[in-house]
Every structure is written in C-alpha cells, then in structure tokens.
Length: 327
Image (cartoon, rainbow, N blue to C red):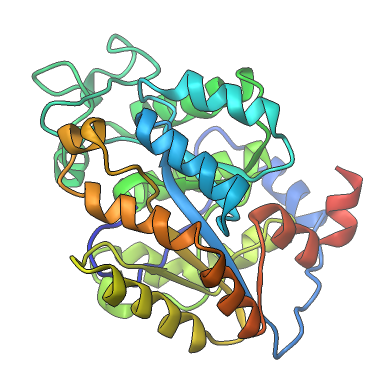
C-alpha cells in the first residue's frame, strides 16, 4: 500500500471506455440502498497486505488469519509465492481475500514480472524485464490500456486459481496515482462486482499526491454504493518504528481513539527470518506486526474497547444485507 507513517485514504473512479453509456444507465437503475450502520458502533478491519510476496509473508499472514486478530488480507498475484497462498485460500474459503493489484516490483534483488506477459504490456516492463520499482516509474511510462490488461490478468488469475475474492486494493498506491488508472481500477471493481478500497474521510495531506481522489471521492462512493459495493470511513498504516513496545502502544492508542464507523488498519505480516531479511529492510516491522496481531492480549484489549473486528465480506453483509444474501 502507501508507505511510511501515513494515514492513507483512497480510491474509486468513474466509468469510461469499454463500458457503453446504456449499460451505465442500466446499472444506475438497479441502485442498491445501503443499510446505515449504528451511529455509535466502531468496526475495525485488520488487513494484512502483501500475501504471496514470499514464503515468510505467506506463513505469517496465514498465522495472523487463523491464530490472530487479522480479519482480511490482500494477495500480490504476480509474485513467485502466489501458488502457495492460493492453495491455502482454496482450503479456507471462509476467510477474507482481496487482490493487492500490483504494478511495482520494488525490491533490489527480489523481483517479479507482469502476469499478462511482457509482449502484452511492454510499457510495464523495466530494463531488467520486471515491473518497475517505483510509482513514478510506472506513471511516467505505462500506457493505460496496458495497465488495464495487467490488472485484469491479475484478477482473472486469482479467480482461475479458485480464490474467493472480497475486494480490490492497490500495492504502493500506484493504481490510484492517475485519473486514467483510477477509471480502470473502478471499472474493474464494477465489472467483477468487488468493492474497491475508498474511504469517506481522506487525509488531505496524503490526498495532495492523489488529487483525483480528493476531487471525486464522494462521487465515487455514491457510484459504488449504488451497485451494492461498500466503502470504509478511515484508513491507517504505521510502517515505521524500531521498538516493539512503542509500536504496540501506537496501535492500541489508535484503536482507543477510533471514531464511529468502519476503519481499516493496514499491517504487513512476515517472519523476521533469513528469507525476509534478504528481501527487504522492513523485515523487523513485518515480524513485529505478526507478533502484535497474533498476541491474544492485543485481541482482548481491542474487545474491551468495544470495537468489533470485521472482514470486507462482513462489511458488505452489514451495509447491503439483501444484496449479499442473494449472491
């Protein structure tokens, strides 16, 4: 997702190419009514990014989902360890899986390539034959039509692997970095009938880097909810720190001060082992997130705060119970 210390918020776009005007009007005519959430309730999605990145991340994400308080995750389909996580997801269809739509391969010595293949998306290939390392490298060279081909290929590969999907989000924020990318992102959410991560209360500081999100956010939420696709209210991510106790207290203080509504906390599970240490300098942070969110005492304290931990699937059922029951 986005990096370092930010309280991030994002997403959605309109409809354009490949969706004819008459189809859009037909969709609007089938508008779904969202059920309002109780005014005082605080819901929390504890969401682990980067599943399938490597074996360490897979095993830690699985531990968080099955033994800890992690309620949702998102999967990086282009990564080498995707088959391992797909096998797990097939075995546990009751859990919550999104697609972490990926246009970047950011590490120095551990890289991955587009799912669609280099011949179909040449503008998404760097000089070494991998997805570009930075968001700016993608936005400066990628052709929107090829971005759509690649994102669609990632969703299709996950579905073909038998993964029951609950939502879409974005690795490193790249898929929401331009207006063209946003249109594609949202169009795919509508087409595949999957919520896309967008929040009602975007952080204006972060939003300066994503002006289309600030300008069109409420419009996007209306369009999503008209199709029975819920949004969240707030999004947090703490991707820094060197001390376990300080990080733990920051998480708990944030939970104590949550506003009513639906908040997502993005974490990054991993095992701080030789594999992860060889891949990324964030190995401590990932290992520490696993430690915190598999600690029964942390779960107990969240429960004592009166916060209800939910998944994206549960959010959809809360907001659109009739639609969810009919699917």
